[in-house]
Image (cartoon, rainbow, N blue to C red):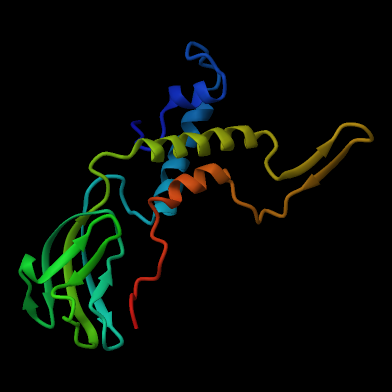
Amino acid sequence: MSYVFTNKDRIKRMMGIPSVVTRNDAAIEDLQGAVEQMVLDELGLTSSGLTSYSEKIDITSGGMGEVALAYRPVSSITALTVSGSLMTSTGYELDSGLGVIKLTPLSAMFSTGRGVVEVDYVAGFSSVPADVIYAGNLIATSLFNQQSSAGIKEQRIGDYMVKFDGATGSTIPLIAQRILNKHRRVFARGLGG
């Protein structure tokens, strides 16, 4: 199977396993599918590639001139309708990285109501950034190393002692979270107000 956010040879290299050693390949491949979904979940995406989305956005307070889309990065807006009127590309600006649509001019505001803004757009990665793939490989390496000691929080040899984790922690290494944070939606959908 082909994976987007992980690469078996890179995972093996991170763990110091020579590529010719295949004893762990099946275990690594088992993890790759889980890691793919974990990365999608962390980034709030439904697919690793470019995907078409449609949204109806409520405007709950006056004075709002911008809205955040659910998915990002935004590749293109195929249609933007505000209060039933189709907008031209001169009536708004798109911050594709943030997935935010801003009305122009600056003084333009949305009227309030349910489903006032209707957007059809394409979002996701046309090419997955290298740092996201690196984070995926870090997660896979971490999961591989945790398999033999899943649930163990602390282990001591002298006077043997084992402490089990309460299963409340994250399986994602902090450095991988830091990398993925750059690509994650970090604010609530309803901007303004």
